[in-house]
Length: 339
Image (cartoon, rainbow, N blue to C red; front, side, top):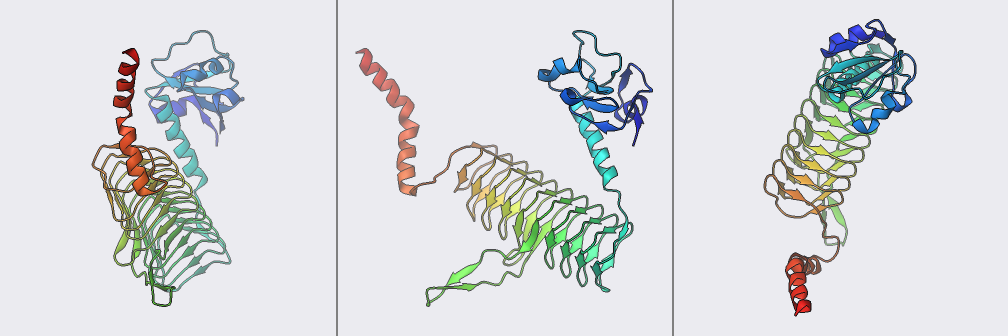
């Protein structure tokens, strides 16, 4: 699709500086800008590229001052926040790519399933008995929707996603390729024969509205009740959320985060990559956990954490007690050296 600077400025409530009829049909990074492309400048570390870029339109902040002249072929659009404005354009562009409607051949849709309006179902998708699919849902090829599963309006389910029976996905969600929603929780009981008996996992997973699940995530169904991913949660690649976990609103989980069974994570939390959270504990609201940290006890609201007990627990606690005293020990040593 092709847009003029004037049209883009209208969408962003921006001001055109240059030729309002300049046209673009693609996006580019400012350092790789080419003719008929749209770019933006938010980080001033890239300012030098503005004066040399071949991009036809560049979005900048209203308070940005030019240090020298830009190319005659470049038109600026000044906005309140260049980064947010470009993000808005990316969202619009991405939605335009996902405007698909219709049911492709070689799909299976149960006669008992309820299907909404304006949906897309790709080839080799399978929609089981009594599944409920909302309006404007996009289901890409090789996807499985289990018995009694529910998918809310405007949700996008990319190729290879598996949504097991009885699970629920809300409105305006995105589930990326390879995600598995509702596989059995890790429940096994040791028996007298030195082996394990499987504990039936009869709960489900509930994903609320506006959630984005990254590629190859695994979210386990509850033993009883529900594993719950609340509104606005975003997860990165390769995240594992175990049975009966609750993840609070607007929490974000970076890649390879693992949350063990029955843990409760509050709202507006952030985890770095490879964070591990022990089962049956509660992490409060607004908690930030640095990458590769291991959380093994309840955490109060508004904490910032780092570190992991990767070796013997008793040894770690002894070491940590010494570590906490290091500043005072160093001060005492310095005083002794002076004497």
